[in-house]
Length: 192
Image (cartoon, rainbow, N blue to C red; front, side):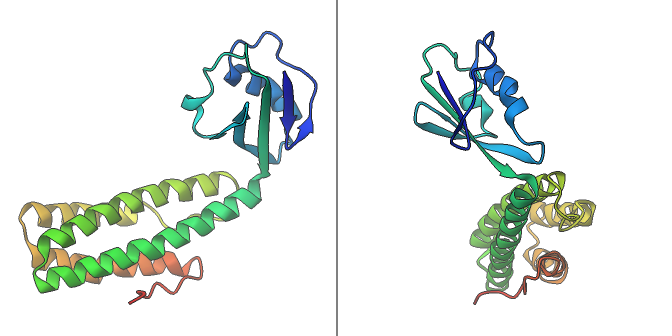
């Protein structure tokens, strides 16, 4: 089997490894401690290193070429953090449009937009935590800043109180997103 790390050939290691995951663990000695594996390529099929379920249990037998791609931790952290701030901009726009929609009586459309924005915000917070774990500066915000607001939004949704939802979005969530965006230099202003 041919093994490469960043297109640099490495000696065979992990002779006892039965799975690709075990072999990758054995290859850790060749990875700079300031870097993380970001991509795994097996016989031309490429996978995100975080998507281990797709490759880690694959048998080593029959693999002709294994290549690992690494990135410097701080470089990757900066890239992740930039993606978080870009996501915040899009989330803010959805919340702004949902708030406007509630004001026009387009409740169903607004609720769909809120649902999508909340899911995107959840993912952005996870990504932000990963960036911080890789060494980026402290995150965009604390989840506890959002917890009480989320409970109030849910209560308003259950009561079908569009007016209260609009107030919570416009007066609480949008300013919170703006504060978080400002930490990354984002304007927070809607694109429209």
